[in-house]
Image 1 (cartoon, rainbow, N blue to C red):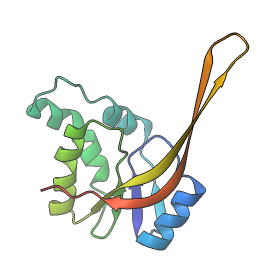
Image 2: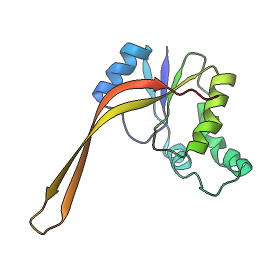
Image 3: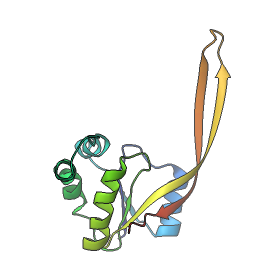
Length: 134
């Protein structure tokens, strides 16, 4: 059974689920517990490499369940240092494929009656793309 570990606090859309099943052969989606999401989303910007490793250890521990052939979806809005730390470990040690989702974004601005501007951003899933490091 091929799994996708979704390293995000948002749930995948219908189109993303169908694409993952069809193009990546995913059978099961695994979402992280809140403490893992919090750890991944709060990478300190001033962290040294040693601090970064310590900070991300719970994420690595959670991903220890991934096996060869599984996929990890890494959101594109995350600290790049975390990506460059985690992806090589996953690919080399675990032989896990890391991907991110590409999308088309549409923005609509509406001027409200009080003069403020409401901005709505909608996205349309396009595909999953492999993350290649090195």
